[in-house]
Every structure is written in structure tokens, then in C-alpha cells.
Length: 177
Image (cartoon, rainbow, N blue to C red; front, side):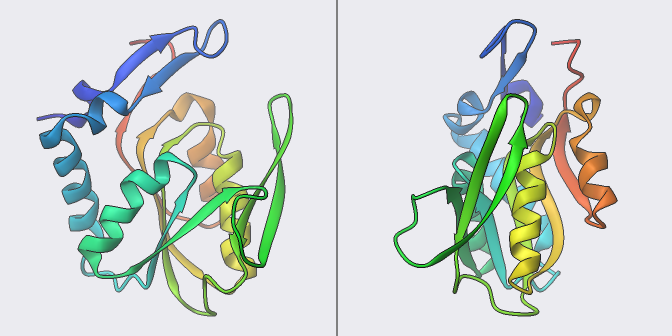
């Protein structure tokens, strides 16, 4: 079963001209969710991953079961002021304004091999900020893994320019459903 067929497209959300790719339809399908986790796990099971890092919030949904299947720890990267212990953070630019993500200061040890996971890569701004945090902590990024890549938006190229490998389970052309 193709994972892509289980992802709903919502035109003009949250703004006119945006084709929003909604993974909740994939997540509610037991076979689709299982297949997604299995496909990602299969790709990384022999790569000696120390921790899976998931970006808030859908990266948690995919990343935690992948970490469980790989027998590794899971680390959340969250929006500002959501984590209770000491954090380090990184500010990044959005289309209209800026935002900040944070990680616990003790979440990653130097030289740990990290798999970064999120549901979708579009512009790559959040993923770029996450990569900078992981590297600041001394983590080595094995790969950045996404369920969906929107190649027309340029995030994959942005992340690859940082020296990171990028993998996605499916791609969507932004001009076509």
C-alpha cells in the first residue's frame, strides 16, 4: 500500500495557495501507520543510531515508535518554553516572523549518532534549526528523515547544503494534488 495514497491534501490551508499535506489520515490507518514506522525502521536498523530526535509535534508521533523499534532513546525538540529542565535553543526565520525551538541541555552527548525525524520538509527552516542544535551539542546526524518531502519548496536542498543526508518516504509536487 503506498503511503502517499493515505495522505490527505487540503487546498488553501492555512493560507490561500497552500496545499496542506495532512498526515492524520495516514496516522489513523493502522496499516499505514505500521508501514510508515516499519519502512523508516528498516532503513536505519543497521546504522547504529544512538538516539532518534523528533521535531514538535508530528515528529514525535513518528519518531518515538521508530526509536522504540530501533532500541534507542527518543529526544523531543520543542517550541520555546515547553521543556521543564535546562534547555538550549535556536531562533529561526519563518515566512512571516521568527520562532524558537529548544532541546534539553543534557539530551545528546558528544559523538552520539542521531536520526532526525519529522513529518514533512518544506522550506527546511525548522529542520535547519534542529540540525544546528544537535551539532551544537556534539551530535552527529546520520540522516534527516521525513514522511513527506515538498521538493518544489527547497527544504531538501537547504538541508543537503548543510552536509546532511535527507530521506523521505514520499514526495508531493506543490502544484498538483
